[in-house]
Image (tube, rainbow, N blue to C red; front, top):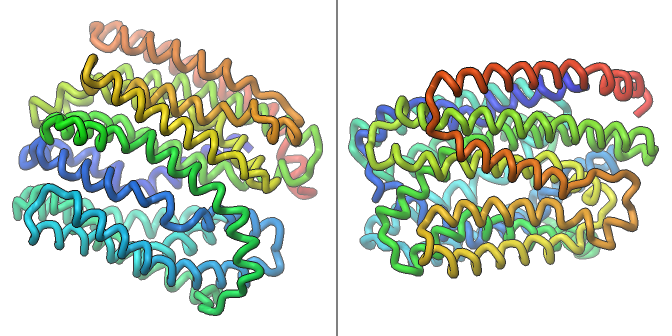
Length: 478
């Protein structure tokens, strides 16, 4: 099982995340033609657009996986109606998002309209088809088509980034143009996938069923909004405090580079969900124990891998970043890389409660965490500078990831104990150590890296036997 999970995680990391991966390696070229101001504008567009992101699909896309397993004979009918409703709803959503961007962006009228058009078109025309098509292939455990489609789109985006930013000197606008064409490429492929499998939108809504779906999905919306408050609201807080666009851009660059580790998180989340759901769906304690062990192994691996990545960020910035101001933001990136350790412990929890349709309490945890993050930023940024925003995000991200384990609604259905607070402490200690070691000599970093590599290899070998014995033998009966 572990081998297959890592195989599919790697495929999803290389394919769907290829734009980010390749984009990382063209930084030495494009950063010559970009300034902190460009990154600041991009940060504000992303942050303010993100205010409504949680409402983009009303949480309905999270039900795709559920009904695929719970209603295997009828899931296509359910998907068609959900797709039809989301197409109609996207028009309303795009109108509000465009209006918000128009009101707050510090740009000329012409640039505002161009940014709005480039950001709204994919939402209305492309996004729903892409989400449904890719999710269909993922649930069929066909990672290669997803990887190929995303690879093609990724190369288009990379080429256009180089052309628009380094040749046409379009600055931040180059990102939006490239993203639009990348979305168009993916849309074209996934339309064919859905047509072939006869999954196209049905525009007739049955209120009875729609209410049922929304009753399950809407509590997920505040949960997603809490994530927005954690990941993006700090830029809005900085803008509110009249911190310069230049400084916001510096923070955003360091944050985004650190967030490249999100590639692994997203890919693992996609790859591991079917394995979790197969184990959870049996309801057997033995299978849930296997899911628990799987979570613990991956959590430990994440701590070692993120530590290793964070340790070398200073050198990586020296190689890949051509702008001296931007190079200095590696300290922010270290904290954001280590923050990714929240993910494994959250994967089990999320899959477990969504399968059991116990999502009604999620919004309280996530929204409270997001609000705490905003308050801490308002209080601490004036005293300690923008670096503290990364630290508050680290702490509150772990809060929303582990708090649900202690909620009474989860306790009612809990069958195994994962000790989530222990993993928060472990991740915090690892973060403190790697931040302390970030500027040590290269020779010492090499020695530490070799030791970590040996530990990671040993951990993989130890875990392989247990997971294979407790999952693969059951595969045919799950």
